[in-house]
Length: 345
Image (cartoon, rainbow, N blue to C red; front, side):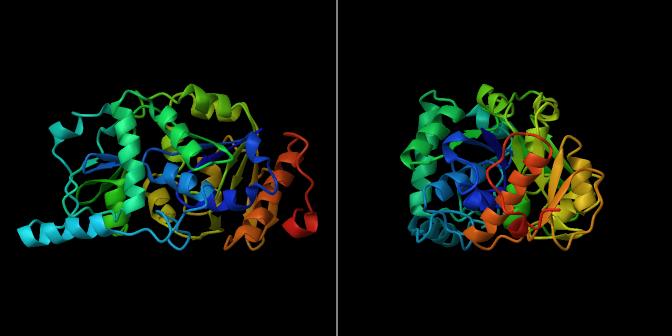
């Protein structure tokens, strides 16, 4: 049994090749829900959906977002209506009172759907309609996620980190922004002063999440702040990770990040924007997988390989390095690995 903590695109890319190393039937993926957003009354779970669509073979892997070849007629009409009505096509964050009314799970992340700032495909939207409707019928987010996973015929067990609301709020020098507004609408341009995981102190990880954390855990090359940070902010998660073998894949090559706003966000919360900073953010990690060109000394076991993942073969190579790292810390009898392929040392 093995568990992957998934946020952003780094871990889903790793999952692309993990099935050749770890049995999907014995794999659990815990999805970050800190950057979920309610848009026009529909709950959108970007990190969960990336795993959902990837596992279902429909993910748009050019963008690592949404469903491949999806139409966008509804999104286009929303923008046409807003333009015709003279409505501002900016992210329309609802007022403070609205943020804590309605569905509790949508707290602090509610936006109007007028001229939606995230382009949602038509088939993609059907997933959000189904999810939100099932939540309104009284199902938990965990139950809904597993129902959708069945619909997409996922081979792994996919669960959200919590059934409670947690919102990643980026504090900039101008205002507070929900992470999706910061990243999608503002293109990560504002200067960041801090990142808050609103609601995390009251939220609880699900039983399914805590059960999964009893198995060896893989943290892929995801953003340590907004992809993994919301999970670590939940009561009991870091404690659980200290009690189980953990292997982390760095999203950096020394001080160069592969993609996304990780460097900017890490500096804002007090970590060095580098592999060394990732190690500081994950004090519970037993071993790391680093790139061949990353000479960072961490004082913990390291397996090196080419960590760039452009296709399934790349992802399988990195997954084999993860398995080798687990074997090195005595986690379990890892799948057979080829040290020459992983560059393990």
